[in-house]
Amino acid sequence: MSNNFYWIEQERNVPTVSVTPANGDTLEVDTEGLISEDNPRIHIGKSSLNSFSWAQDPKKVREQCEADPDSPLVRDELGQRFTGSEFLARIAGYLDVTKHVGTVFC
Image 1 (cartoon, rainbow, N blue to C red):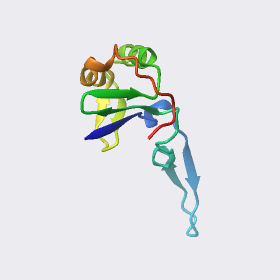
Image 2 (cartoon, rainbow, N blue to C red; image 1 turned 180 degrees about the vertical axis):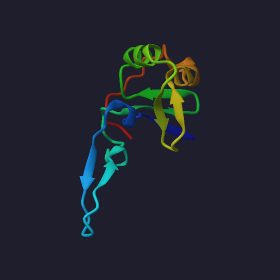
Image 3 (spheres, rainbow, N blue to C red; image 1 turned 120 degrees about the horizontal axis):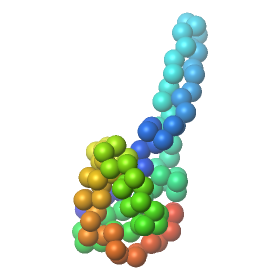
Image 4 (spheres, helix red, strand yellow; image 1 turned 30 degrees about the horizontal axis):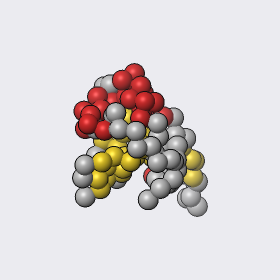
């Protein structure tokens, strides 16, 4: 079974949108769900059985996770969130693999 991983955008200053329905109330809508998972800016990579296909440079992903190990930085396609250190532990066997396939792939 494969699993895609993405940067959590909400913690990265994703803007909200103000919506004013007909009743005059103003609602703030979080745009995290509006950001396409196909966006190469947030897609980290995809794990499957014994491999990990990187959509981003593994060294840069490691640096970012090590810089903020206790904050939720990554989510998978099922919505599970990982801190920087949890994500590094999850993909520990893949960090030295250089299968970097680019930013857009299936």
